[in-house]
Length: 293
Length: 264
Image (tube, rainbow over all chains, first blue to last red; front, side, top):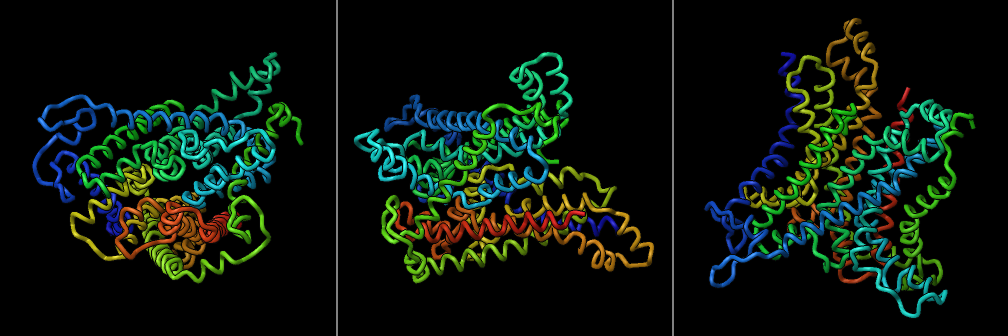
């Protein structure tokens, strides 16, 4: 009886997630191995065309030749995500460290200040950067009026703009886990290292950073996953010029109507994400911290 | 400041952090300021005005989109929070349940899948089974990805709650339901409220999943804003965005305060 009641409690949420999350993902895995229907959807015939299109191109004579353009998009997306992660570590670590040093009351306030932008609309936060970066935007107007530049420099619709937008969006994901591991850090360890004549930088390098590594790794995963499939920042700040994975997937399900290829791309994204999560899980087990407690 | 804090201090850290918070809030501030700008320019200040808010409010498309957003977010919040509460109660208050990590992982699955994949996968499912419920499709999709956001604060609250209170109620001959109704749920309330607010914000802010799943006529506010931004920037967007921004900030702050006050 007890067990039935327990399962009845778990059932609605679990069924919801299984039916509308797990099942759809299984469907696109299956679709990625089917033939495409030119009018949208798929034909139930086994085909590896979608995956071969990632690397190869079929010309009119049915000859296959190597086509690196999709591979380039994949690598560019991974590259942009990796640069964003690195920048988030460099920005996030000092901030997390600073917050961890504050008295408890101020700490909570600062953490709230970090979380507020995270809960506000992604689209709007990205849109704000258009106001700042465009030719008539804040930065260009300011530089023009100061006489530093004669004509506006193109800031918007560049890869740099995409990365800037991604950092801005996801840096809270980095600060929070690093803060969590720094908060638990035993100050006496730093004292001990300083007593043993470590310099400030030495103490930081050999004591603080190694001990906050689990937070850095967790933050990196949390930033990497959404950056890899990002859609809004590349579209709005990259102007759709620098095509990235997210936009490419979205295209296959809208204008291009190539569901198998879109599904194959989604599978690739999921594999990369899973590898990142596995890497994290292995790390977490070794250090005794977990992403989701 | 206690001396032990000083040992960790590094020069320049304070200014770096200050700069960080400016970086975090300045773009938002610019948006808000220029939504009150009298002229169309987004860089030159032409005096305070509420014109763009009036224009946005008078725009039928915006009103319809706002209404859709509200209906979807409210329904998805009620569904996801109810399900998350039931699941959290069953999962934390039952010690002998087999395969607990599996259930837990399942509930958190929406957090681990990239949004774009969720979006196209859900679209594929709906297209394959031919489900076409208008706003209903979006509500289903939103309920699913809101579940973990509602679930986590509720579970955290349950884990921090003193179980002896419930045991005491049972010892005093309260029935299982009476214990739940008069002891557990009131104590759990801050967690539920906090979870519901987070679910609401996540739903009302969602863009990419809604974009893929929405059928013609089911435009939500973020989708409408996106279409405006793609055409070109109008100050109306600033006004609508500011309203959405304020809604989010209001709910996060409230959720934070509820959780804080609920601690004992």
